[in-house]
Length: 201
Image (cartoon, rainbow, N blue to C red; front, side):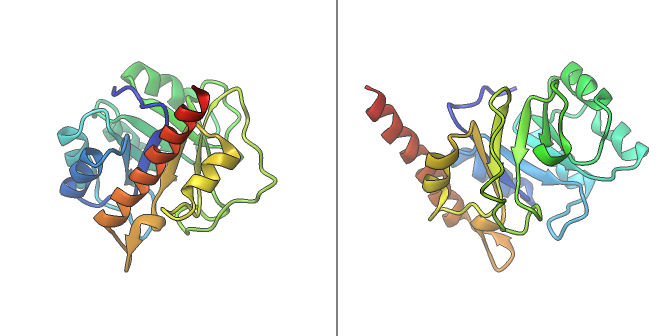
């Protein structure tokens, strides 16, 4: 699995192998393949193609998956699983055996075994920011999502100081991933990191 840079960047809802490769080459840490019901949902075949071409860098996003889908997930070269609706921690243990990051949304989390707790907005993928009163939980790696875009990610990073950021609609135009916006988003995050590093010296 690829080691994260100091701050992880995940571009979620990527719909093709070409876009996945491009986003990763542009500086993203991970791309998200939506296997959950969503306007960004893709077939398992396309998601598997991404994972095979970009091993350790694709996060499979799962919600309400039937047992047959779960069985197909195991053994693929994912970088992680992002799971919304599994009350037990059994999937996390198996994910770790496969070398995957286990990512849970914080509202439904509570499993200490999860690697990353995701602070998402009230409607994941909608571009709506989460409530300001929801505070990160410092014992876990925390990634922030919901309403992020190139113009505001620096302010969000300054407020929350997360371990990673997860963006989808904020790097889209007309419902499709926009490479210019992805590049701008990555640039804004890395620039924020450089400023923080200079301030620490």
